Image (cartoon, rainbow, N blue to C red; front, top):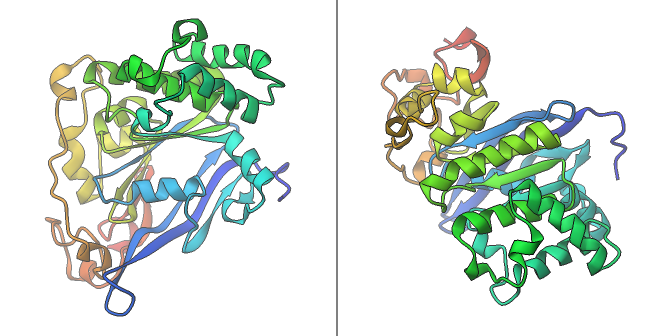
Length: 333
């Protein structure tokens, strides 16, 4: 394992890419699901970093790279200075998973429907929290449940189907907390809960950052919740990050023409403004050929497209406190 004692970087994504072949090896197309993505999270500055985009933007593939579920086709993902793809031994992988925990879109997929919820959580504590036995695991589990507003007593002898969607998602978050992680990766965690419960879940992530010092990577297509809880946001389009920076700048005053089309979905600062929170992204889904097109992947829909946008990928430039991939800004124009 690498020496990680000197780095202050919790997570570093360094020009990471991942491609897939579609339509056969000979006549098929190489689809760049993640294309040259870079960002860093600091150990000493817990934050909620959102990866946002439409279906097919590449955000879930990026999540799989961060969790070591996929290896990059290019670039690297470093956690506390260690190349995640180089983790091969089971003890190293277990140590990694203690520190990086996922929360998935469908909480019911996390739990065996034939097992009581408490049994699953206690097993997690024994396997990942160094609890000596099931009895000593109980206070570890109870503390994690209290962090999400539940208790071991109220879950006693209950099966997943006996809990509401909001309860089971909170239990899923509690499961991720048992090992005492440094980073939680939440992939669309509110997309399957009732709208009235979304605020409770996203406020839970804010609490974990502020009170427990955990960083959260929040992956979503819901710009309303992203605007509310994020410190920084990266907007993805067809494998690229087209704009990244502080959420107030990126969603409040977007520069990239694609992000500008998302602006109508941004809520008012007041999270109780129901009209604003009811808005939805109204963008069309493009075809697979959009991934392989030379040049900017937004050129076909961009109202400000130039000839060079179709000829080569735009560079990443710094403009107004964020990074934007567009020929309109900086020296790129």
